[in-house]
Image (cartoon, rainbow, N blue to C red; front, side, top):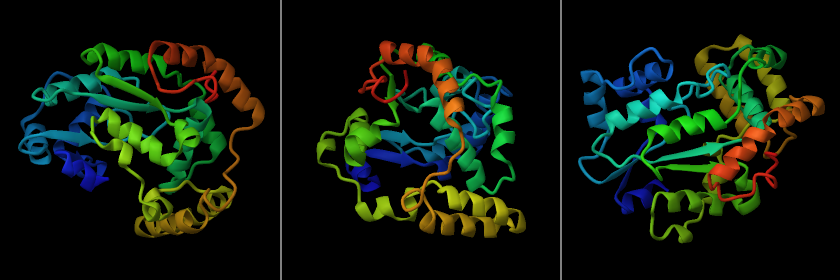
Length: 278
């Protein structure tokens, strides 16, 4: 995919490039409302210049660019973060491609990411933190829309991948990026099945991680994560059971009205009802 982007004069800046840079650190502070959104430090400007190509288009991909992993940080400062991006990329025609997810699955996914990182946190403790957090997508999406020029926000639902398959899912993304021959793209099957796929832990992997991670140092935790993803992921083992049926039903009822508003206001390319949002 990276080669395909390069062939279309679309340079790629990844999370690994962005996160340690002065620009990445500064947008983190903006996303936490610790710095003003309309200003950039000289260090951030210099690092951004080093990350961007001399000319042409650029794709910046980072799943936590405007929201951090902790469940308490649910895009509450999305407007400031997007404003900062527009300030930083003033010479570019900024578009944002944003994927939402059913709140129940999003909640479980965030927790599993914390387990992947070796955090010592039981799910009931995590759920207690999440009780007061509003996980409606409506407000952060409205905030981004207010900040971007018209037609620059592109919304999709992550669950579409199960309906249309991974090839078409990526083709849709490439079409939004305005690649002419996106319809010909196919995901490399070895890549999709291998470690780079970053698969989620299955139930057994989560149990092993809870037992073993407290005994490991950071380097060993990374090795353990790789081992569990390769041998005990959801590709080969049952998914972890976290939320009960009553909890899932309660979250569905809480967010179905705002989810419906999202699908009615924006074209997500799929039926929110069929995807289980309302």
